[in-house]
Image (tube, rainbow, N blue to C red; front, side, top):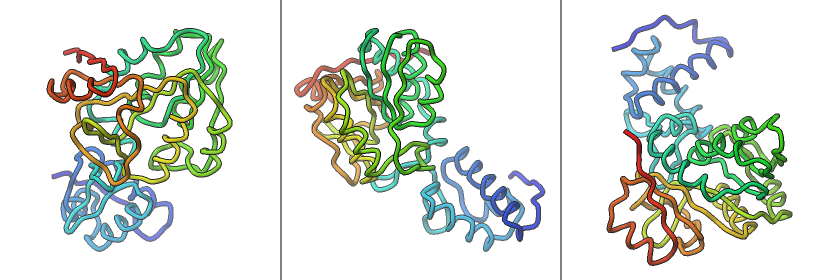
Length: 267
């Protein structure tokens, strides 16, 4: 069990640094107990308890009796930093397959999902493009790229997603029309897509309404699942791109509603 020295718990700076370390431990392990965290960080269980209340209030982590988790549930979407570290080969495979949908000269809208973030660097070779996004890290990918016209979709900043959401973002999206929208979401079954957060659903719905064509990018961990809020039917997408870990029966069911591309995952 890890041990490390920690500064006194009283100052705002040391408190924030301790909470950052707590978050790092939870993101690395997925789910841990309060007593484990207290020993790992070198503070009392009550101090960890207060810190976790603050972190859960920000939507960074999910509390449960006796412990804390970064893993998603049907009502809780996990932190971006946690999602960036899981199912990476599958997301990269889906991104490679989805890149074939983009041609030079197109206008494309990208959401704030980690799968689309894996796609973004592949699109730099597709220039000239017009790229619209609400994701700060996607903006970073294209900033300064020659022949990429980059449009930021602003709104209320979400630290959990490192992106912009809310009414201003929806209004900015509704003022546009693009050739192709590429999104992911947290859950889907053979007929319907879902997400846990209402604000995210509203932004994704606005994005899908703005596109002539729509593509859904999903790794196998997100399929045969549901979330609290229905996003839209699978049939609303022109393309669904999944990795080869999705069961063949589900792929067949999806193909009754839309065009499906299965991406092989490299060993």
